[in-house]
Image 1 (cartoon, rainbow, N blue to C red):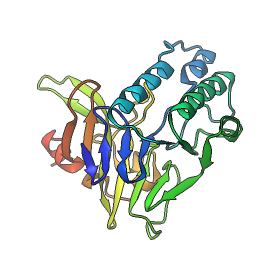
Image 2 (image 1 turned 120 degrees about the vertical axis):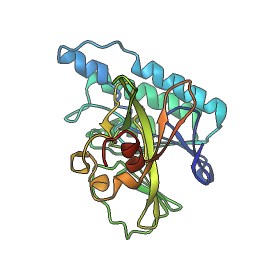
Image 3 (image 1 turned 90 degrees about the vertical axis):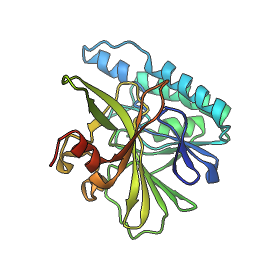
Image 4 (image 1 turned 30 degrees about the horizontal axis):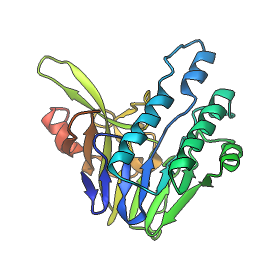
Length: 250
């Protein structure tokens, strides 16, 4: 499904293909998460890395992208790069370098000390990057909308939609957000992390969003596309219309 001309979601995966750049974009991998949690006494099955490799393999069966961009939070721990992260990030970058001509990492708020790993494995590292009008940054810092770009692509928020049934049951699904802001296109990426479902966009007030970029715009004017692996994409109207349909607002 195309969000904008030349920019499409690959099946029901949290991945965006930008045809003019021959670029696959993913965001918020949070590698090393299970290891960090085990150090805190919370034991989770170590499935995230395997799932990530599996998803990228399936995506590449659909599009033979030459380039890969990770739009922030490649790793999970804030303060340092732990053994678990160093190994998983290294293994992932080795995998990526074997399959893509160019591997780009945009630095997220979790990516402290990531330069030592990206440099070792030959990945490019930027705080932000403008490629022919496609402006990539993680989304944890404000931006100036007057800057020259056509489309802004961010992560950080981990957007999701909460769906309700007739008897009060609910299901949370990851989603893309997209729309136009101040005459420019905006795409908010869902998290690639298996464990990160994130912000309930249709439930929480704008003031409680994570990204300062989203806090300053009318998020309710954006549209959403929900992702359930193996199922058809869930196309939603604007967030405001969804809230009205769910009787969350008048």
